[in-house]
Length: 132
Length: 132
Image 1 (tube, rainbow over the protein chains, first blue to last red):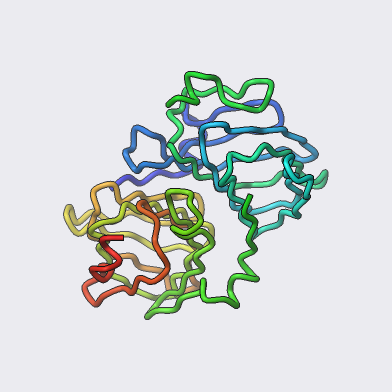
Image 2 (image 1 turned 45 degrees about the vertical axis):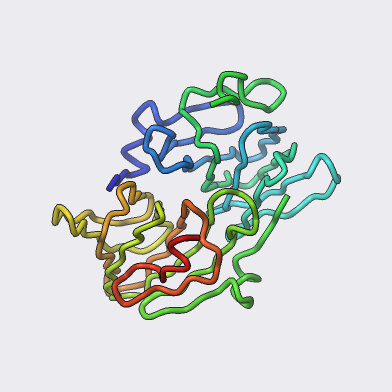
């Protein structure tokens, strides 16, 4: 059994920072669960274009509000606590947090993230990560 | 892209009830993510012995407090918002919610739950489910 606390993990290398967001990787590939589990903060007012070409991801909103735009269909879905979106088609998308406060998201990746990935400018993960 | 709202899913067959808990299965095997994702409520004061023999499960506490006892080691870990536990060894465990209020948990199962499972008295899933 693995037990981890978000507040303790924030002070470790599990906590990664990028432009407009940061993420605490509570469970990674090395934990052997077959998925990874992250608590990600999308900063207030952030607009993030992302495209995980080789990962499926689900994202559950714990706090905050915003929207997700499906770049394939143009549809925009409202995000609030209790809403989950799942990128079951490796969907290219734009995530926007409202200006009032950050969005706190519980994210699951399959295959699991290794922890060494870096988002590239086009919103994907680096190639090494994508083949992980 | 799949988008679902917890409050809407509560009024559907995705919402299952059992003794001491209920669960809204926001993502199931049929969604093709390779995992399932559930928001589970552990009722205040509930004590649940569980043993998922053929599923790995991670559980992240969104709200409420309680504890988890590892039946193999006897260790008891405190649960509060921000704590995740992962049953990476199919660990038999006892989950206890404090008396004050329910615990709200974000759960991930691998392999994904189909939605037809029923907890058996010994805390496992029925055989058909376990082979899912």
